[in-house]
Image (cartoon, rainbow, N blue to C red; front, side, top):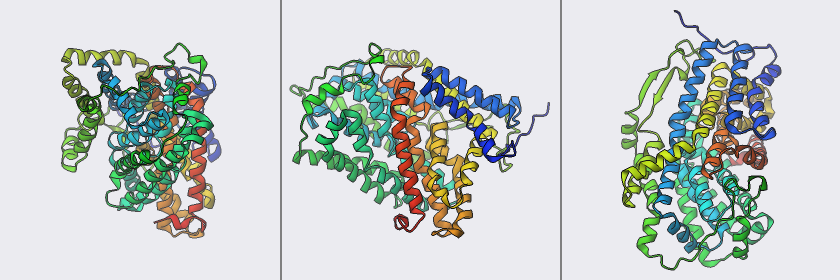
Length: 564
């Protein structure tokens, strides 16, 4: 039997705005069902996938076999590696809880400061940035959200903080992979044509996000009492990003930024102390959504007394996180990274040999890569097992913790699998690029909306890397078209738009259904995704608007001096 060949049309209805409107239906379905109708994510995800499937087959003309096959491919990719990474990250954390070592870690944090707002910034922003730099793929949100609950934050508040903090470092996460793929897909031989632009845009976000985090933690009082610390965190992180992103060490931008910011802020705490920490500790443990009372949301009693902590107990408490840093740093070394990648198993996915991209080339999804050793999941699993052995747990006990968490995450598996299936069928049918072409018609005003494509791409796929692969070629092409009538030359405009795409993706990450499910699972309240989305989507829109303004002004004499 001959397999059907399919090349997506980017304007199936003969009207760009009408085609884009129909292409947006799956995204609208997800936002309405999850945020408006308050469906559980494991119901909203499959429903939105079904909408994408119907649009692909009925409007974009995708053969049913191809549409179903690429959906299954996406679902499998959602399970491995994405769910596997989430399972491994939470497994590592739960091993420390089962061994009784997390109590010491909580008390160790309070050696730095007895103010939970300070600790919240250090954990979510600085340590989370380091985890994003080394691991990515949802691990930072899973780990930091669980840690915030452990030091006394109400679970829902912990999820909001972890998601909001996991914006600034995303473009250079996973050792610089997103910005590297942006440059390659955008047709640039040198990634340093792109990375400084993305670095500067996200560095400017560093002047905003720490203050938003303080507001989420403790409202106006938190801003009033802790703004000097937020300023030091943001400035130290942002300056480091600005500098390192323009060097050959661009792929370590977040590593340098996180470590330098952590050191600077700890030194700063020797000179300055916030007020109102004790009262804040009581407030941050109060649920911010009474409807979730009794579903894991509670005031957590935190023992801040560090007496009895010996250097050995402190070391043992931080062993898992030291191991994460060491293991991921070693895995990021080029020879080790290449060796791990050489073990990838590539499989021709059944039923997709006739699938083409919009340019007529074989689509990337024709092949499934079983990256069993080169994804963060296997490294996190290794850390979990080694941590358990160091804590003198038996191997059956360690594996028992894993099995318990796998059972808890069955709905998360359905959610993330269906969302990635949605992303695959939208991308392969042409729906996602149709949306991109619609925005690209804005002409000279386009730089003011360029980050929106990165935002949409990351919202749909859950990955800034995927969003860059999806849209960087389009961004580069639009830049070449509109440059002649603008303030910038062709190369500058192309680089600005591709860099803006990568930056726009970072603020779409926090509302991606994948990220919402990871956060809800990490705080122990599966099914709270709709509540989290309603609480955080406003921040995503606000930060996106800021990036659009910056990107647009950088194409004019007003801020073009920010370009490298």
